[in-house]
View (tube, rainbow, N blue to C red):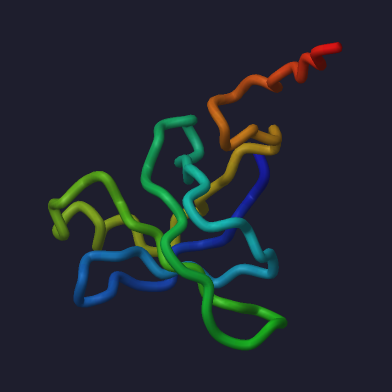
Length: 94
């Protein structure tokens, strides 16, 4: 697991905002420290050094989200093939 950043605050649309020094890809899964799936990366914005990341969370209870401000979130360090996880073999016909 690779550290993504700490939760800065919760937006009015119930998205978690992180401050990070990385630029991850959109749609990547985000995890908590105990490897539970937390959400997906929705947006990256702000300056190139120290940008902010918006995470669309799976939990809709905003009271629980407020308690998690300051918590560190992570992304997987494994590369995932977006076409289904497997490499496809190309066959050539003669």
